[in-house]
Image (cartoon, rainbow, N blue to C red; front, top):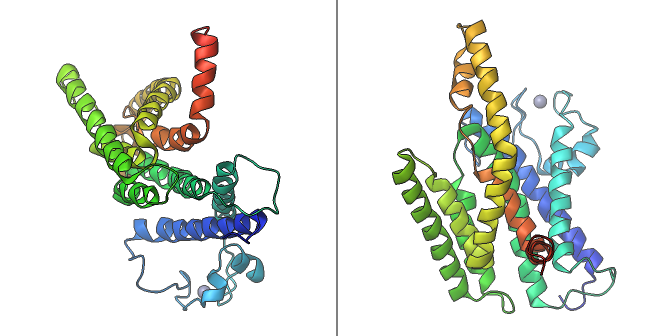
Amino acid sequence: MEEIPLWYSLAVFFVLGACVGSFYNVIVYRMPRGISLINPPSHCPLCKKHIPLYYNLPIIGWIILRGKSACCKQPISIIYPIGESLCGLLGVLALYAATGFTTNFTAPVQSLEVWADALALFWLLLGIYPVSAVDFKYKLIPDSISVGGIVAGLIISFIPGGMTPVESIVGAVAAGGGLYLLGWVATKVLNKAAMGFGDVKLLAGFGAIMGVTRAVEVLVVASILGILIMVPYAKIAESRAAKKASQNKKASGDEEAEDEGAGQIPFGPFLAVAAPFMYLWGDALKELYFKFVLGE
Ligand SMILES: [Zn+2]
């Protein structure tokens, strides 16, 4: 790692991000159709022919094929390579932000702390999409990201320079436990379920990755974002649902399910967005807050 210039490492992070994006494409296609993620191996959804590995390469496969499947020449949506490219760019951002946006692209990244930061940011940035998409659609947070975050945080903490493994474990327990208690109290006071256990596990993961203080800050910022964005949104959705119900009583099953969830506010997306933001700019945001709000 001592000889590898930054630009090369950034390219590797782009490829890693694009591969994650390619995996997301597979999940998005297969999960709602009830197809296993591993079996059957990659096949054309139209003519069922097996797709060779090189056509499955993220972005490049689509370019080689010029957007048409090799087997039956059916168009492949440009959404796939675009999604993969965006995930690749998030991968680049993870490492580049961890270096503090240095302009020296030929120098190698030597600090182990920078690598630990890059991996943590990679996890947080690429977690935004699955958490948001699944929480909006199914009102739950995938364990692979929430519980996976606890595992990822603990593994990263073994890289010297950043958080220690003990800090990581304390972060997970304190952040998750704290939010669980908060939800328990709110449930007693409001007399209805106030917090999903998925949110608790997700925040525990953030605690493991960035420590308890940062995780609490994520919770605060996510709550403010949630109130600012979702309260007006929920009002609009509610009035629209009421209008629809009075206009048209014969709604299809899908629409009924949507209307049911109209008043419910998914919190996961706000936590997921706030986490990498606070990881990067938490200190700068606190400084601004002390300067302008408290006038210090
Ligand atoms: Zn085909």
